[in-house]
Image (cartoon, rainbow, N blue to C red; front, side, top):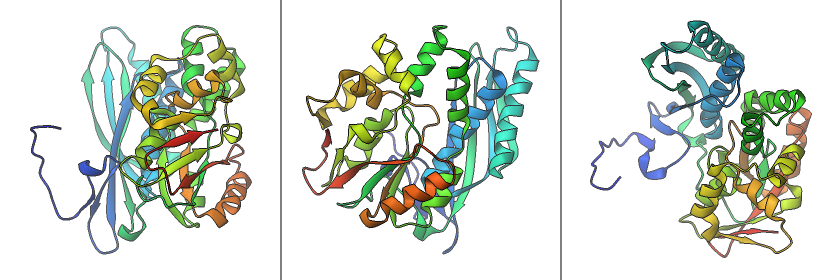
Length: 319
C-alpha cells in the first residue's frame, strides 16, 4: 500500500511483496510456518454447512502453499440482537467438524457484534522451507491441472434468487465443503512448480496472478475445463454475479479469447468461486499420472486444462 511502511524480517520467506495465498515464516532450517486468514458472509442458508464451507475455504490456502494446516482460530461477526445464538452454535459446529476432518486443532478465536453475519478462520500450518509452493514459480511446458469444477458463484446467485433445486443446492454445498487436502497430498509426490486455489478472482483472475510479472504465458483449453452443467444454464439466464464482471474488467486486458469460445463460458471462467479447487502447475511428463492419482482419490473432475508457454509473457490465450 502506497505510503505505508511495514516491518520486515529476514525469516519471512513469503510476505506482502509476493501477494501469495498465505504468508510463510522460517522457524528453523527444517520448519516454516504458513499463516492465512479468511472469512465471509453466508453463501448458503444452512448455518452448519456455512461453517463447513467457510472452514474448508480458509484451510485451502495452506494446502495451496504445499503445507499441512495444524491450528486455527475462529473469527466471528454476529448480529446478536437479530439472530438466535443457536444459529451461531451450528456455524461453529460446522467449522469444528471440518477442522476435525482436516486434523486441525481449534486454539481460540475472537468475536464481535455486527449487523452482518460473518465467519471464518485464521489458520497456521507447517512446511519445509525448501518445499514451499508459490504462484510465481511456473515453468514453460508445465501442464495446469484443476481439481474442482467451476461455476459455484453463478449457482450461489441462483440459490439466492430462489431458482435452484434442492438437488443442485446439495451438490454445490458438498463441493464447496470438500477439503483440498487429498489433492494437496497427491501433488506432494509430483514435480509441482506452482500452485494456487481458485476463489474470488475466478479461474482467469488467479491464472493472471500466476503469470503477471513473469516472462511466461498460459494456453487454456476451454473444452477441457470442468464446469458444473447447471452453471451454464444459469449463466444463460443472466444469473452471473457482479464479481464476475469486476474480475473481467480487471483482468480481460491479459486475456485473448478465440472467437469460438462462447460468451457464457467466458463468464464462467471469470466467475468468483467459493472454496474452489487447486490449480497445479506440474511437470509436463507427470501431468497424466497426477490426474490419474487425483481421480483414484475420488477427485473425479480433475483435469489438465492448459499449459504454460514461454511466450508471450503475461498473456492468457483461451481456445
